Length: 522
Image 1 (cartoon, rainbow, N blue to C red):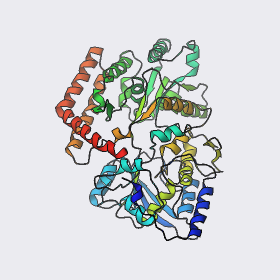
Image 2 (image 1 turned 60 degrees about the horizontal axis):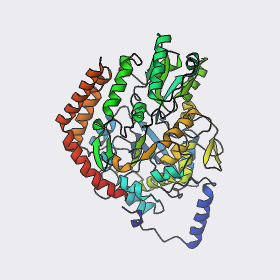
Image 3 (image 1 turned 180 degrees about the vertical axis):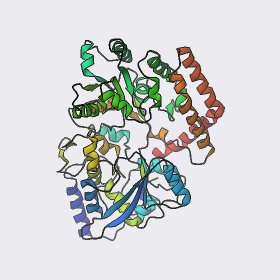
Image 4 (image 1 turned 90 degrees about the vertical axis):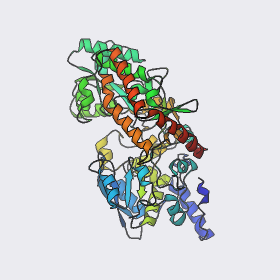
C-alpha cells in the first residue's frame, strides 16, 4: 500500500510553506539520524492553546511508568497540547474485558491485542485520520505494508522496529536492553586463573570449575523470562519460542528447527551437571535471580545485555566489593540473530476517542525526529546533547532505571522506532554497548516472517494456542530430564503432541500466508 494515495492539502500559501520548511530544518538541530520512516513534521503546539486531556490505557501490567509527569511528559504536552490520563493494566485479562464491554479509553497502547484492535468497529484507521487531519505525516511503505489489514487499512504502527537498511545505515543504533546476555563474576574468574571463555564448551568448563571450588554457589542463575534466548542464539536457531523460521523459501515452526534438539540436550546437560537449579524454572518472579547475583550467591547471571552494568550498580549501592562482566554475545561460529519482529507495541485511537484529530497529530509529533529524540533520550540540553558523529551524548546512565523512570525517559514511546531506541543503547565504554555491538554484527532482519500472525478467533489461532500452551507446560520435562536419552524422548514426545494437535495444518497455513504477506514488502 502506498502512502502517496493520501492527497496533500494545497490550501497553504507559498510563504507559509517556506516558513514551515525553515522551521523543520532547524528543529532537528543537526540531529537527523538518517531514518526515512517518518517526516520531521510534528503535531500542533500547545503554545497559546488549550490543553486536551486524553485517556490512555497501557496494556502491560509490568509497566514501570504510571503517571504523565516528569520533564519528558511536560515537554510533550508543551509541544502538542495533549496531556494523558494514564491507566496501567492490572492483568492481561483487563483489556479483552474492556473490548468485550465496549467501554474503551481514547488511546490504547498494547502489544498483545494488536490484531483484535485493528478493526474499524473498535479503532480509527490511521490512514483515514492522516488524510483528513495530518496530510504531512509520512510513514514509509514497509511499515504501512507490515500493518495493513485485510480491509486495506492500518490502525497502528509498532514502535521498536527498524528495517535492515535502516539498521545498516545507522551504526550507532545498536539495539536495546531487550536482548539476551550473560554476566560472570570477575573476581572468581581471576581466582580460577582467568580461563578463556570463547565458546560454549569453555563456558561449561568454567561452570564445572566453579561448582567444584565453590560448592555453595549457584554456577548459573537465570532470569525466569530469559532462560533460553542467549543459548538459542549460540546454536544458530533463527527463531525463538512460538515463532516461525524460513529456510530456502519454506516456513517451519521453531520446534522443527534442525538444531532444536541439540539446544534442548545442551540445556538438559546444564541441569544434569548441576550448573543450574531445578527451582530456577519455577521462580515466583524475575527478582530472585537478581538477588542471587548481587548478594554473591551466583557466579553467572543470565538475563539481558545490560546485566553486568545493572548488577554492578546494585552491588555498589549495597556496598559490595565484587563485579560482573559480560560474556561475548557470540560463543559459537554458528551464532546468529534473525529478527522477524515487526516491532513491540502500537497505539490505537479508539472509536470512543473524544478528539481523533488531536490524537493523530499527537502521534505525528512523537513520530517526528524531535519527538522521537525527546521521548527516547529526554530533554535536549538537560539530559543529552547531540554528538556530530550521529548519536546522543547522554548525561545519565541508561541502565539506571530509577533515574530513567522518574524522568519519564523512554517509556512514552507510543510511536518510535528501532533506530532511535537503538541509539539509547549506545554509550561508549559500557559493557551494555559492547554486547549490543557484538549482536549487531550477527543480526539480520526478515520482517516478512514476522507477518505470519494468526487472526483472533480463527482455527489457526486455536491450534497455535494449544500447541504453545502444551510446549510451555511440557518443555521443562526436557530441561530437567535425568538422562540425555530421557531428554531426547521428551523432545520427540513434544513434537508428536504438536503434530497431533495440528502442527502440519498450521504449517501449511503459515506457508500460504507467508507467500501472500511477503509481497506487501516488495
